[in-house]
Image (tube, rainbow, N blue to C red):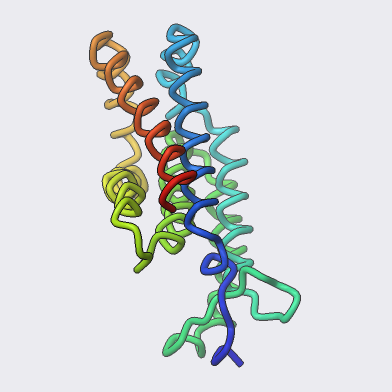
Length: 197
């Protein structure tokens, strides 16, 4: 069934992936630079925002469920190869785990949900950049590998988002220069998307 099947992630052109990533970085870092106080306040409260955490957790598990759901109309379905026999068990476990996490009364749900979301999101641009010709494609994994590392920490140790955010907002120079670097990186990705990707 999967012999000639190309996953939807693999159909995403490198240029489109770079363009979308560049635009996202420019938008996020521009907002952070133009509205620093509002951004810092949002960062300081993010870890404790259980409502946003539940929304993002729901998005995560819908995404995972669609990756597991093996029906012809589902473009997100994924080949599990040697683990394909576990697909039914995973499909049943997915909503059960979501229900348990969603209903559990505890703080710091948002960092776990955000970490899981970033882990799911990273595979899209990384797949688009995988084994492509221009060496500038490396701009995509160079950005995403540190993000993936941080995301795994947030899933396992969600209090780190709260602690890191509290430290980050107290460093005005770091805040400014890190967002300028992010803005420049996004612009560089846009240039590469138009000329080399």
